[in-house]
Length: 65
Ligand code: SF4
Image (cartoon, rainbow, N blue to C red; front, side, top):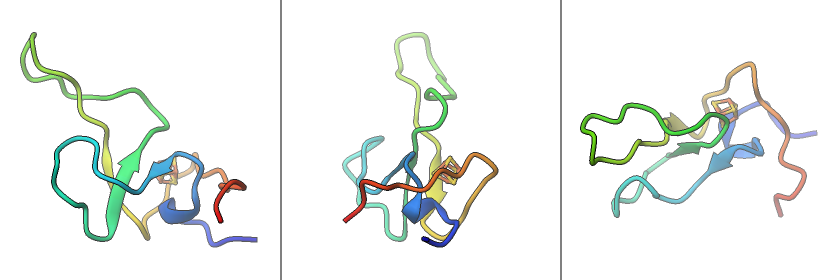
C-alpha cells in the first residue's frame, strides 16, 4: 500500500504541461478539468499540486512502477 499523497495518486502527472518549466517537487492534478481561463482565447490551466500534498479524491496509482 502506498502513502496517501499526490505523487502516488492516479490523477497526478509529474511532468510539466502548463508551461515548459520543470516543476520541482510538484506536478499537475488531473482529477478535474483545467481551471482559470483568464482570456477568451487563452487555455485553462491544470491545478499544480505538491508531490507530498493530498486531497479527499486520492486514488492509488496501481500503474506506477
Ligand atoms: S490533489 Fe487529490 S486527486 Fe489530485 S493528485 Fe493530489 S491526491 Fe490526487
